[in-house]
Image 1 (cartoon, rainbow, N blue to C red):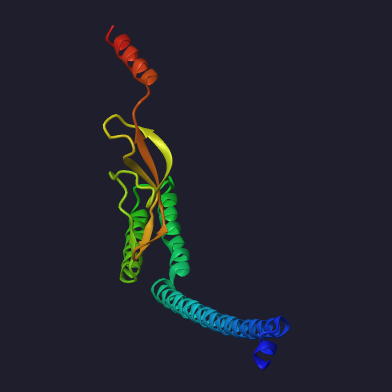
Image 2 (cartoon, rainbow, N blue to C red):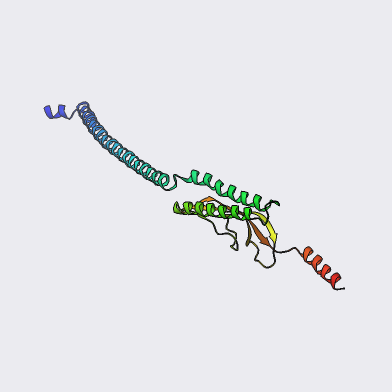
Length: 207
């Protein structure tokens, strides 16, 4: 009788439900455990990523600071040096004004002035040179946009086009950096119209 009762469909169904419920609970616990493990791993990965980014940013800031410090040491006098070049410019202008003064031309006074100006000019160049401020070579050189700024074109068939034939204002560098560009005039080929006019002029003179 007991065996028959145990095999009762209602009892069997009840046991099956109970077993299924227990299995579901176990599966649920397993899933929660797996989810928990995944969440923990994700959190650890996120933290590692944040730490890596933070260290990288700190390293970049350190390098930036070192670079700025080096530049401040190397080029701290950049602005002062640029302003100081006006002394040379004013000296050169003064020489031109005196040279063009009709009352002083060919006089001993003018010669003395020029001698003094040359001494001052050499002293300034020497001081600049000791501080790694050096003039840029221009005349006869090819135009280099990194060091020269063309202000005009001058017709000259004897020179290759783009050759510097006139220096309007001298340029300077400080170490490996441009302090100011040289203002120059560069050569260009004569236009055909001008060549024809010259040829016609020569023909007329010969006739």
